[in-house]
Length: 229
Ligand code: CA
Image (tube, rainbow, N blue to C red; front, top):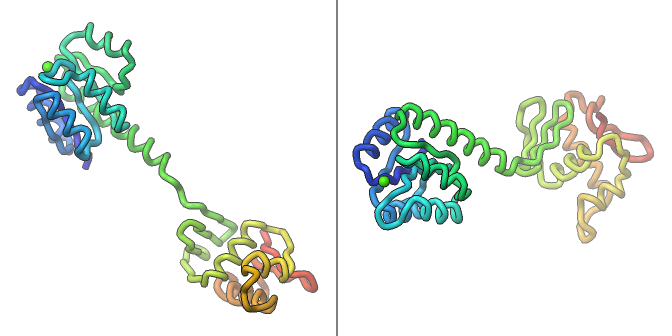
């Protein structure tokens, strides 16, 4: 549930806004004074700020400026004076929206919803997505180190995972066993190129429908392996 902070010194207006927003499913906190409101905006978990311009102690201009330095939550500024709205627009304080009082509470709710959904999309698009390799029925999540074959998750050992991922990321490229060994196992590893053969066999058992007729990892006789696309 989104949490909205209203900083408004006119109690009747604050109550009206709060009632409408709560009816729309939002959690609402109100503050009457600028200084207390600023503290709340900076220190508490707030998803959107509705900010009156003229406030005791610290005014809306200053609150908007200070909140902007710390947070990128949507800020809707409200004022009784149309002139003030024009003035703050001109100042480029970074508020996302401006409303002149009196406004209809449903208009406020509509704008709150619009700003929150835009803000959520923005956060979502900035979230780091997992690195996925997908070839035919095989899906490899490199970030989570998970593998699905035709939608079913299979478990792989570390080296099996590394080998499968390396081959899948270089499709149609033929690698010798020596190349694969060097790529996946570090130089100090105990083992030899026979290790590669063993791992390929294990991977095939997990990804191939019929290991005698591999659809993914092909053996190129006398050379090595390739991931077929
Ligand atoms: Ca006021």
